[in-house]
Image (cartoon, rainbow over all chains, first blue to last red; front, side, top):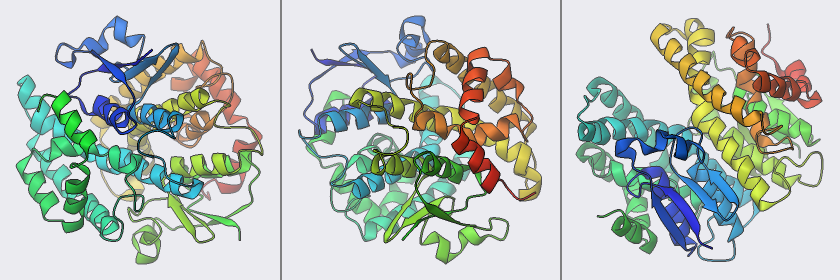
Length: 214
Length: 215
């Protein structure tokens, strides 16, 4: 029985889970939940994800939501298959967790409203909060400097290997790099740019982009 | 060499402290004077480059992000104290799910309430009434989901207390205390029972007794 992923393949959070499946060579089935018509807020989906968000997974009787929790679960369950995403020791795993949590609190906190205002709102015909976006870009610059510093002495965020910590940033990075100003901010930071070019060259990312219709 | 936790008087470090106490792990605390800007000084930034608390030092090993430290402690000391990660990989999946719900969905509106109601004047920014109202509404919606879930589950991840429950303690303590919105918890029968249960755990009482902000 193959795990079912409920979500939209172009949305960042389902993409996080898809990347994990691709890195771990796990077979999956995508069941489309249409965000443009707010299917995620309808009763049937709320039974899977009570906060009305995507993704959610069903694997036989086992159900889970929260993309990072899903990725951690599969990375643990299939530890011996595909890429090792969780580090080589307890101490290494905790540093993986540390940078994965940094993504939630510092990176996504800025990336998400930037993407909502500059990519999603125009698509829905809504007005972008220009003042907010400028403030967010300034804050993002400060955060990217910290990442740039980290990546100047570490090949990947948690050390010398690609892990969950890097993977979890990729969907939002994919969106951010399509925004000219942000693209330039990234390219202006040598180590951070080097890291993005290396991880976006991975076969899993390229496969994901094909799945997402790019 | 004993594990050190920086910034014990603040809320996020208390996620780490309560976990250490639950697991019976010895530790020391090192105060960080946020009012004097100690967290923005190079010495502290070397431990936590984003300039926030907590930071943890365990011998040569340094780690930050309170929930990452919780996971580290719960795994390293798995064989002592309550098993805060559950017994199976699937249990752990549920723990991670609700830990992430706390981080992505519960915490952000509660953080807004904390900053704008408790700390605006002392930190010198105007308290945003519109944001307070919106944040309370958002948090109420989240608590409604918790109410439905906790009517079927004793604790968040199942019938065992876990990191997911403990992660809620520090800022919810602010919510029912200095933020002045205890009704958000008390008016929801199952959330209220869950809160009474987890907040009366000896480890949490010890955390508050030893590390509450000096009056």
